[in-house]
Picture (tube, rainbow, N blue to C red):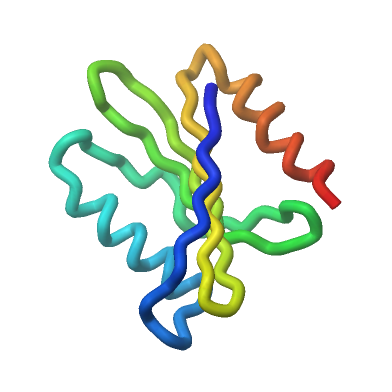
Length: 104
């Protein structure tokens, strides 16, 4: 399992977390290679006291992997946390996510 944390400066004014999630979902659905299957795009998660939109996906890229995306927009920045894992490493993925809860 691994994690990527990205901060993006938004070029669109007034975008909120839900708008950002919708744009990300559109991008994932348009991808042909690798193929993404959206498993759940209705959830939220609390990370370090902040609410993030959550999207869970399955990716077919030479093997089956899962990617959990956590999105939050604050001002003109988007914070994206992506946890990638295989079924066999799902406990590691959960431990990675739990580590963010320990952040102040």
